[in-house]
Length: 105
Image 1 (cartoon, helix red, strand yellow):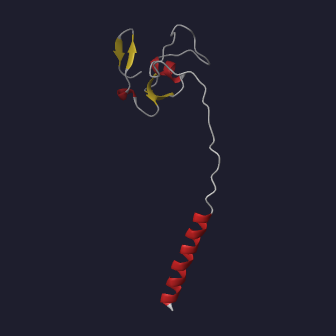
Image 2: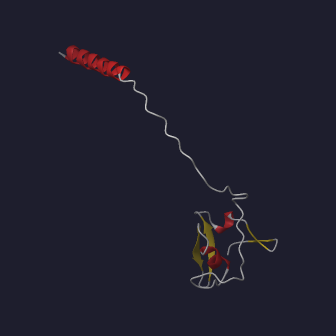
Image 3: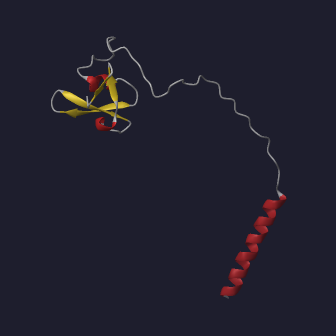
């Protein structure tokens, strides 16, 4: 009984393969055109720190970076914050201000 069930299962799979081989209709290729400007340096982001950012002015560097897409901040103490870029903490970020590297916010 078990052998006949196995034989039927194997033979039925061959018929499915044969049906796929017979139905070889080709569909027309779809062409996709992408139009856009390429970034010259995608990892460099420059802004004017003197220009006020909305909704509130920044109290420290972490608050200022929070206004940029991709950045968030964690509170550190009562008055400052540590910036995070896509989940990477401040110790893994290189933040340069006027040629000087900043640690944290």
